Image (cartoon, rainbow, N blue to C red; front, side, top):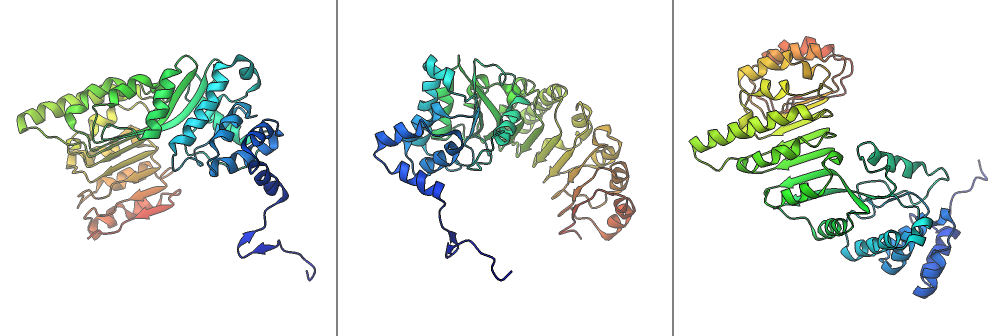
Amino acid sequence: GPYSCKPVTIGDQALPTLQQLAIESLLKKEEALAISAVAGLPWFLFPATFEVAFKNNQTNILRAMVPAWPFTCLPLGSLMKTPHLETLKALLDGLDVLITEEACLRRGKIRVLDLTDSIWTGTYEKDCSHQDRTQKKSEDTCRYSRVKKYLNLVTDLKLVNSHLDECAMYLWQWAQQKKGSVHLCCQKLEIWSDMSYVIDILQSVDLHCIRELKMTYLRIEDMAPFGSYLGQMRNLHTLMLEGIVNTYSNIESEELEEKWMNTLFSQLPKLHCLLHLYVDYIHVLIGSLAKWFRHLKKPLETLSITCCHLIQRDLDYLPQCLNLSELKHFYLSYTILEEFKPLGKLLERVKDTLQTLDLEHCWLEDSAFSDFMPALRQCSQLLKINFVDNK
């Protein structure tokens, strides 16, 4: 109406609230006074105060706030998108207080430090629904999450050329030193280019916690020793294999490929939770699709095969495969198909579940589209299709 009021703003920036002004004033005090004050903050001011101190790199204040954190979970992933080693050290120093001082352990409530891509809201409702969801995420797969003896450190790890970045390395070493009281729960593991240091990491993390594994541009001779660790990832739901290359001569190459494939096939039946399989630029896939899928324990929801060469035997097998009968997302881009008559049969099988179909750059001709279009029209759940760059 004519008397409605709008918030007063300066440009596009709303004026700070009284709470924000109070927090900024508190944190601008002499550091010793600020540290003394934050320890006695009411629970509902902790998240907003913590966020301001974090963004200002006030490491000593963060070090004091962590032991007094009034919730069971401290989700830091979104705040640490650009990791800062000194800030991480301050946070872990605060956890050291919880771990080493028995009196403080009774007062402190943190059971989970979540460094994954969790959402920081800056506020907590009284029922702590956000931190409950964050904690439940780790409880779904982590067998240590309900053991009160352990502080659960939830993180993702990425090894590039066999190295972690300095923050991840410091975090891993800290967790190793605190094995008796800290459980390192790695939910996503990425391995790029080199396996030489990976075994040390795999031996130190709980493989049951890993839900997503991505292996990129590795040599096939490095893959066989990895097999026994893969089989222990019983909660793995996403497996991504990209650019597994071979650097040996033809005779040695065939022996290595057969050894790796046999190792992989022997471990697939142990992956009872696997739902999403991504295979990109792996030439050893040729002619072996039936072997891959026959070893799976449950139907896939996502299958992505890109930049691979499939022979007719592979294509003919797809509609027969029981483990593709509940497929939701099917990606077959940058793969020479030219003629793919079995696709119509596959689409008929997944007409009640398929949501995504991607056949970009597959050299398909108009006649091929005509063959599977009647089946495509029956896909009642389809939300996205991509036929770009075909003939």
